[in-house]
Structure formats: structure tokens, C-alpha cells
Length: 303
Image 1: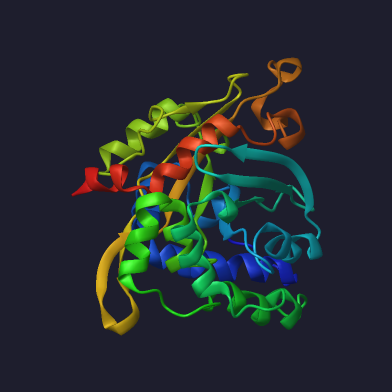
Image 2: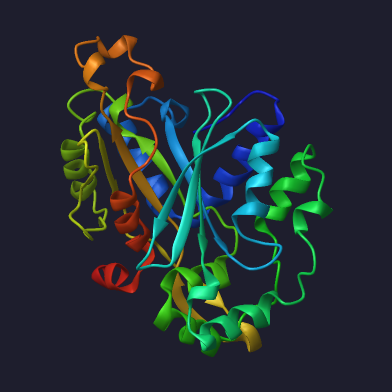
């Protein structure tokens, strides 16, 4: 999870992970328990499968803007996914080297929402007259990290947040959290047996008090059965809205992925397996349920 050399991309990723880990207490709980169990000796032993971001599909924002950061640093755009019920588009991005995590960027199709929901979103984004990426130096680590944590629009009114929440919990999440790192993902298949299988790792998580997203089952399985994913229920944060009003809302969460070897490499020894030997990419059916880690039906299980 730590990227320790001096390359800009490493520093950008570290700049994302540090505040995310502070914001999501489950990260510390999971890592310390993994150490106690001997699954890792240090945090840096964890292989990060992917990181994910959420965006709003309005002029000058959305995927076409946000992806520029990672394309500039050597990522390549891969498969497209569409989530009709949640009104989302998404792409994943392959890293320039296997030592970096994949990136998953999704976008709310704002024009597919009700007029009321569109009005709320456009009210807050209407002052963004050009792509904000144009204003930063993509080679400047501080510029990029600060951009990913700064407000692109004013704090929302709590009434607007709640009105949008009723129609699109994803949209409400972005309205308040903006480009905050939505989640990072532990590569379970890289861990010692038997915890390199998600079914065992999930039992470990529950034994240390972690609440799992059970939308579609605790383990989401791809159609080819080679990609298995689970996730925690998002931690809540005390959000301060316009006029100083506060409320507990969904923050970020942790995901877990088990990528099985492709059939032709099933008998290859684990030590010889690389990303090229394992199931690559994502699965819309899995991702659709992972999105619900920030939904109230999941969060309310923790209360």
C-alpha cells in the first residue's frame, strides 16, 4: 500500500492513501489484525488491487476530466461498464507497472436523473466553466494531491443533500465527498493460505468486528467465477453542511479482491503467478453491489 520511491505517481498515491486511512478507521483495524495474525509483517506488504473514485457527469467534470490525471502518469484506459439502475458509467485503467494499483473511475449520468436532482447538482457545479484539470500542473505532486482533496464547489445545504440522497445515494456521496478516495482494495490472493481465499478472509474480518456489505451476498462472484470481491460497509463521517449544520453520512470503505488464475494457468505455482496469469479487469455485476457499500441500507446495519 506504500509507494516508496520518488516517482511522482508514487507520491500522488501516497498522498491519497494517508488521509484516506485516517478517515476510515477500519483500515487501521484490519492492518493491525493482519499483522497480529502474521498475514503481513508491515503495512507495505499489502498489495493494492485497485483504487476507486466517483464523479459527476456534468460539463467540465466527470470521467473525461478526472481520468487525465492517471492517463498523464502512464495509465491506459480499458473496459467500459454501464449500470442502468444506478445511472452510472465507469472505466478501469491499467497501471504502467504491476506494482501500481488499477484505477476504477465512475460517473453519475446526471442527465438521466429527475429535473429536481439535476437542478441540485447544477446549482453547485454551474460556476465550473472550464475543466479544473487545466489549472494544475500534472507533474507537480502537491498540485495533484491538493486538487484531489479540495472543494470544487461550495458546501451543500443539508436539504439539498437529503433530496439528492432520496434519488441517488451515489450522487449525494459525491456532492459532499467530491473526489475523496472512495476505496482501496486488498489483494487477498497475495496473502498466505488459507487467507488467500476470500471465504476465509471474510471470516477473519467478521471475527475482528468488521461489518461487510451483503448486497448480492457477502462475496460478489463474476460470471466466469474468477473474480471474487467483498467490501466493508462505509464508515460514517460527521459532515458539516452549509450554515454549520451537521449530520452523520457515508464516508469511504475498504474492498477485498481475489483474482483467480486463468484456466490455462490454474496449475502454475503461486510464486510464479503474475497479474498476466490472473483474471483481469472488473465485472459489472460485482461492481454494482460494491457501490452499495455507501448506501444507507448497509450503513444502518452498523447502528
